[in-house]
Length: 161
Image (cartoon, rainbow, N blue to C red):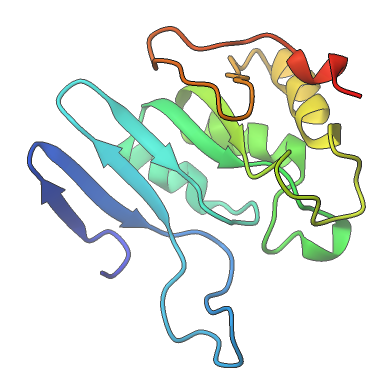
């Protein structure tokens, strides 16, 4: 697929949209596109960022495909040297705003420790920024099953030692 190409499975549409990263996990890079996804059905519009640095294309994706019911946006494994390929938590919240997301769902944090920040720093910083900016943020426990109509918002990571 190329960016903005779509495919449909039954009644669900999948559209490949741009992200800001690189492709390849081997010695040969830039042999495939990197991307994010818009997943649309008759009653739900979702966005999944994949790995991405913050960039202006989030505004364009929001205008073209939004507003989104949920935006699953990368938030973790960042540092100042990786800003082209991974967002800082405050940028993740800005991406959700740009995408016109009703609910911001931070992903890509808490499972693996890939950077020098502490384990809870990504979600703590994202939550503080979301609260400041008036953004609704979903915060399920890792592995928690929930519905998109009734999602968790508790700050459970504050009690993890």
